[in-house]
Length: 118
Image (tube, rainbow, N blue to C red; front, side, top):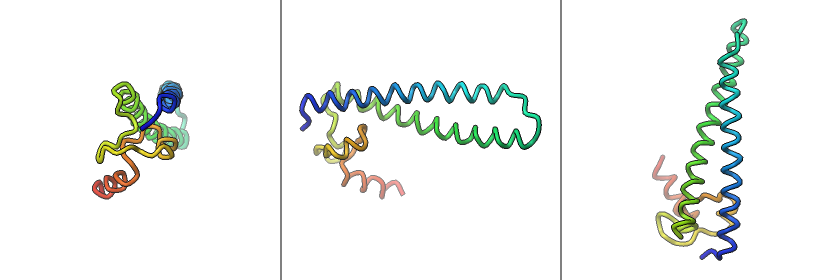
């Protein structure tokens, strides 16, 4: 069970990360708009811009997924269920939460979940 201070620390980390991701998403979206507005002179320019766009889109997708996980974790803090595994309902170890603030599963259940996904 997390203390009130630990919960506040995790909430602050989640909020800070949310701000960073939102800033990243705005920046990447603006860059993509600029690339779309460029006049590309040759196939080399187009290929280069296209490859960058693919990478940027992949980053955007990953960042949006992380943002959703952060929102879910913040909701759990409000509900009093943060830090509890969604599968076994045991406490998620603090070192795991330190590494992945929005972890939904304890390490054992995460491994089970990943094996089932394959």
